[in-house]
Image (cartoon, rainbow over all chains, first blue to last red):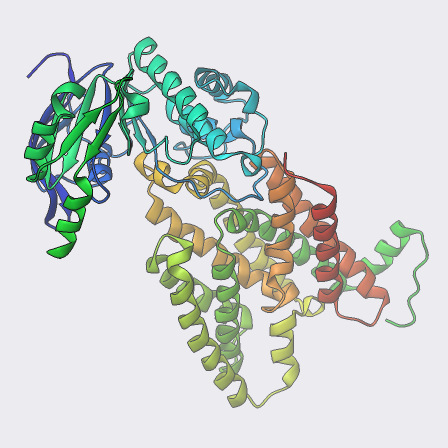
Length: 265
Length: 278
């Protein structure tokens, strides 16, 4: 095992109720790496997050996070789920919800000032200090995304798990968020694992791609994973990866794989 | 009460009012209940559990009717049934959306049982009426004591679980990942609603429970930028409505609950037109 590795999986399988979604996954992730997790819907990307967060147990194999078996309530992991159920009517300001990332697990009422300094610092890290006093109910999807990212960062985690943070963002906001995340990974030496649908906005900043499909996982540099041979092997059918003049990738053939799965259900 | 006249010397009016035991008891119980409903209601609205609160108060009606039938104080029937119902609802699921159908099913059955109890009861119809619409002027000193004890427990528990409850109300998935026992806290909170509903029924009855538990909190939700301020606003609105309702009803021959519901509704309308979430 690499001494620098922060997450290690060996022959790991994950799934629900003894039915594995994927199995025999082995990988190592090092401190400060920016990993993008790709794969079709239902391939088990979020399942991996649940395992890392200690919210569910591996069906078999070993998983170590920060040198320990994963367990719920690890303050060194920051997590931003895919969706937030925030009502338009909620007047509560951003600062309060960011503070909860630090104080929300403590019993009692506490002092209202506790965590304010850290929360403002976390908001600054995601370029959202101007949102501190804004009501959650009046925020756009992109603003909420940054506020919840700040909440995940307020406890100064070593690992950041982001479930589709780029969904529902327009191209400009998408590129802003990608640069913010890349800065955090580099400057704060935070390991980022980000689930995405499309690797193109992330190609310039990511270190590795973890591709989940067809019950299997493969990890490596974008060049080694996102190519016709590697993806064809993973899916078990012919997949073609095309590159345009700017280096953007188009993956062709996955649609057939989806239809193929469906036929056998 | 018709011989009493309003003098515009408010302090004197209040002193006159407090010479009557039933008015003193009403103010004491009403104050405790307004505080409790304001606090618990804030989280009910934040967690979108209004339907659960509504169902619990109606399940409590059946309990109260059953208690009256076998000659017990309605409050004990209320507590027994709402606590039982609260446990049941909490174990049905953690998300409001999953629960609504199950809650509705249980609610319909319980109300049917309530109708049976009422038809079996051969006493006065006023008993059922006061359960449905509240009878704060009939509160005894022992009712006040039970209300105070229940209210004290609710407030203490609310303070103890304040931050984790707030966290899971705003962000259940993250709170769970952070190690907050969301399932257990969900059950505890449901029991808080059950107890708060039981004591509130004395003032506004099962049908009007929202006036104290939902409307003040809905006003606060929109206005307050900080949760603690929101709870303060929610409690203040509930207190204002209860006190004003009691005060007006002392001079006019109409039900207290009508004045309470009207006050909170007017304030709710005002909050919608005046405040915009920013």
